[in-house]
Length: 405
Image (cartoon, rainbow, N blue to C red; front, side, top):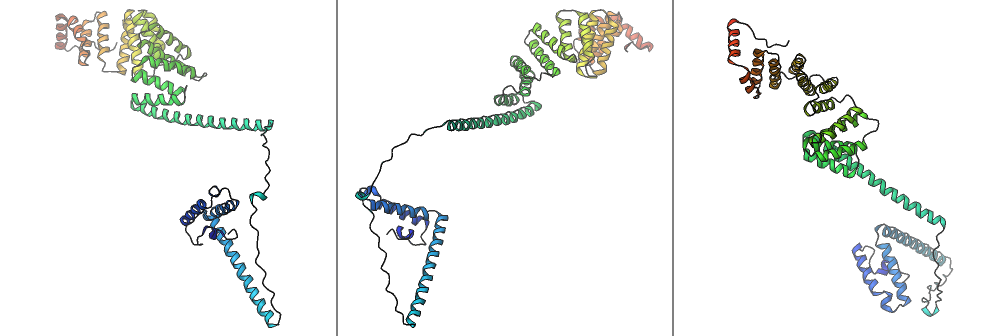
């Protein structure tokens, strides 16, 4: 049986399917398993032969190669038989008898267990040399570095992607979504300066969470570029605004001073410092100087410039410099010509200049622009005498003095 080919061992034809080969192998493996025959070496050899046959025929590529070998052997046998046939005919013609056929090759049965000699080999303990230890350490270190590099790369990509999404939500005014994306970005990239700064702006401007905003701005200060004084100055300005919103004026003033020490071109910091001097400490001269310093850096025709001019006009009004205050208010009107508040303030200046007619005109313009606080001032200032004077001016065709001096 051991001289048979693999198909014959499994008892199948050469055209058998893969499923038929598998079923035949399972059946024969159970039938000839050595454990079922008490460890008989004959069945052990048969089991090995069956396993080898299935190893070859169970794989398509190995089976194809084996079939090619079988065909080559068959062709070789056919050629040998033809040559033998021709030799027999020739020898018969010339009278040479054929030699008797050779007896079939016989082999003895496999040796039994009593004929075998087994020698137990002592187990040897594996010995690690210094070189083995070094190789193991280098392999472990390389694996660790690979894992760390993959982790860092994935965190960087995830953090950057979430920051971009948060920035898009920030520009659309989606404050909650922007805060969520920026928080995720900081989870993957802790200490990422742009994400810290933007999340602080979202908390300050959109969510009005000034404590959280101040914490983010302070954390951003530690991560800001050391050579960028303007960036650090803007962060201190943001911190000062948060301190002011939290009703901590002293801490806010300290933050504004630090912002201006880093970047003196921050007009808004000059504005905030001047406001504290004007409204809290009532140091009008200092406030006017601070507003003037901010005006040097405020963009032309901007709302910030209008605020600086308005507050400087208030400071000059308190200093009884009415002409200078009036000039500031007219400069504000060149930026926001429909400001009822500025017309009201011009009316107050005209009152101090004893020009009741002009004051009434300014209060009237303030009311036209929707500034309701001018109503009381107009009612108390514009007496019947002033009204009569206005009527006389209209009758005589005299225009009131409402222009800029």
